[in-house]
Image 1 (cartoon, rainbow, N blue to C red):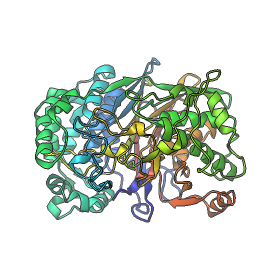
Image 2: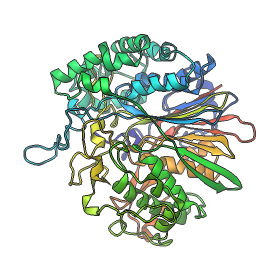
Image 3: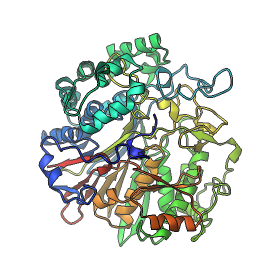
Image 4: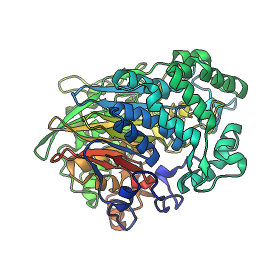
Length: 598
Ligand code: GLY
């Protein structure tokens, strides 16, 4: 159930040929040179604006807004609403996410519209009378749903940095929901794959399973209730979702069907504006700045800590065993720290300055053996500190517990003609979230599973480990791995990136940055490049199927356990050509993502 197409372990989905390109961008998407897998080998080039998402219709919605004079934030809000219609697995108005904005004038902002635990949530709410975890309750059904943040976050983004009205940017989504869109082979396959859970909920069954008759590729998916809800939001703003008719419909469902969310929870929900995390590097004669996600994302801290450790490492590429070994050892240590220290910063003292200090990175990196794999049994979280400041005490490993973090989410990137940029990752957590579609026609998240659902006991699919600080508590935000990131080169916009994939978000985003900033790859090549992931526990490197056997053997010879997976992450990135300033859109072919520019 929880293994999705961002991490396809078997042949499922991974072998599908790209769906026929639809819409205006079809010709360009078809005509690019491709490798033996059918993957494009060059980014889409455009002189003005670019949008890269998992779905061509989502990218086109953004370009439509850019062409009508909207800026990157207008387009990003349009994309987010459109993906809620055309990418139901992860696009959403019933979930939450992060948006990193960098305006052409240099101003930056990070919007946190992560979901929060309802007021009635309790630390042990998923533990039965027998003391055992109810493995299903935090991932499927009404009790897995946290208070959604997406609509509040998108409205805040538009009000703060957009130039258009909510009604204008929501229009493409309303059209797609009302008039419908052709179901791709991938989507039809996904509905079949998700059938067992979706069919348990009446509205999900009607909308996505065609009342059990199922859809075929090229059938039209109509979502009339969602269209009506989007129209109310267009008319009344975010207040509609949190206090209006939509709020009442959602809470009535919760009350009737066993969920926890109340009108009070919705009315209290607030998106937050947080300080962007920053780090500077010198590479290949250029000054780079990384702008990334602060807690409750664990990703930005992890990416900076990893880049700091790798700063003095001469990386050669991912066909070089030494480079893969060293990056995997860095990931191992970064995830040990993540486990110990990262949580909701409004309720926990997260040592961000220490963890992202180059001085600390040097100390941690000194424990890496350049030839041999460490054992995660002996690698523990460090004592993060800034140079010259005494270390604080690390928590004891015995207080660490597992995190069940869902693999599906979606990332999109937008750059407009003026050079404003948006990196946004948002999520329902698992594919199709809780699998519940509320009577207002939108899917609800299962983000409660990103909390530590069983304090003290390792319990998750991914075996991720983290601290008690991420325990369930009313109003708290669960720890996230989502890592929308923007790179500047010599002070100018250079790369916009991010990924879905649960904990592999961090590795996929890190690798995309290394590929662009350190290895100088062409942007599409940087996205296509094979990915790998180490998360400390379990002690093994996940490697994508495209890694050569010889590389796997060489890693094994150094003492690494390895495990093959189909695909990891879906990075939809935009690079800026430093010579021409063209926008280079590189969507991830692992999902037939689409970069559309003009
Ligand atoms: N639900 C995935 C994440 O936030 O990392």
